[in-house]
Length: 406
Image (cartoon, rainbow, N blue to C red; front, top):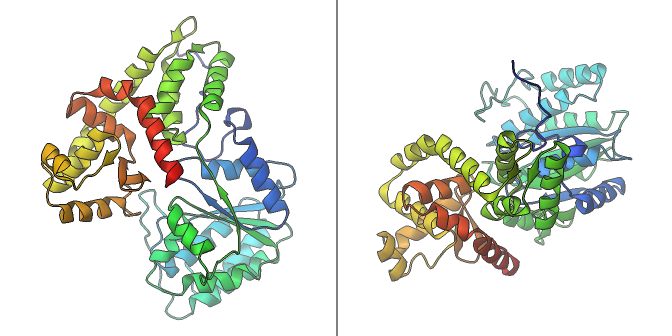
């Protein structure tokens, strides 16, 4: 018989996290609540997997906002305005706090404009069974959705996640179309969330753009080290377990404060921790090794499917941790890299928002987004995993310093 254990307090898969397991973000929560209560639309910018959606869910539980109809619209899988309208309409229909009558009314209105209300978005993030809207203008359908939102008895909060995706649509005038409806909405507030921070900055802060200065901006940064250490130690104590501060700091440093990767790793560390034993740095290393091995086949397969020059550039970044001067003769010779022009093109490919392979912590500096891929390469390609552990704090400080001047 398995004994029922205390719930694992380190959430990483779920967007909505119980308050007792939500780490910090007190200042950001207060700021976002105040902005929304004072009728502001908000641009929420943050690197990937830093907890933007979880923060929004947490904010909606606060006094003054509990009565909002919260509608999350994930725009990442959308490729054109047709997809946008379908996903937006479906999200509004699925809003749990909009009554049955309201959903029925909206369904009729959407159908009247040839919207497929049975559209689903599979987990593989591919849109299927999307009907064309050849018989109607997309703006007419959007008008019906926004008109419905104005009739709800409770105010609405629409969260457009990965909002910068609209810039990649084949239609050129999507921002202009949306701005027309959004600026007229009186019963609805909007949060424009995204991880492509430079693109969002251009959309909302560049003069001449449709959304110029139409919203307030909140930049979400990493949770401070001390607060995350305190949170983890407290969660262990609550479960009658114990973990050393050094062990938590290793997790924090090796993943550079990335909320998702830290929580995913700490979830496993907590799972294998036992009462009467202090979880140490060595225990954390053992768990990280285990996760690396779980992903090993996927990483090998990924590299086998890459062109040789792409693989060389990726492994160079993995080994360097933070790669600089990649087109220099010294770096090219060390890793057998191709010509500077080819390297530049490969980096552009890896930096593309749709690839999500690398990021730029600073000017002409490159780091893998998937830190476990970096650790896998250190273990199996370069035989230097322990070096990664030993240099984790130094690399984290270098990354933060570069980000501060970027």
